[in-house]
Length: 157
Image (cartoon, rainbow, N blue to C red; front, side, top):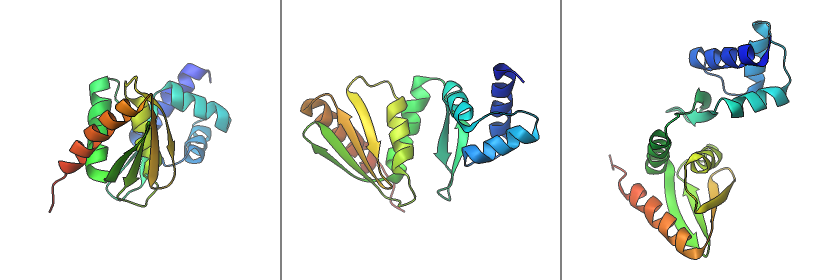
């Protein structure tokens, strides 16, 4: 099976299965006659713009990422609104604490990395805390204000 066929199969598998790990994906690929290494699968996932998103139970599954920048930003806003507890600007960084202790910070970091924002230099994620590194203190303050405004939109039930 060539890489185009393998990538098409990966896309079909994530559309029809709830796949939580690359190992699960690798086993499904093997069951369909595609032999590949974990490193190859990782490259395919990146090339196909596949990311993990949480469901209502906090479990994360691979999905095809939206192709439009607007959808990525909307997805990020929804994630911030639903899952962020605090946002604090510290010099040229922003510290984000998630409201769930279910390893959500790495997912949020991926969403931030995927948006088109020239001010964001990079992200570092722990389990429930995320550090967003921005180009300067002004950019950090602006990003923090933006995120805090979204958190305040959260509906209280």
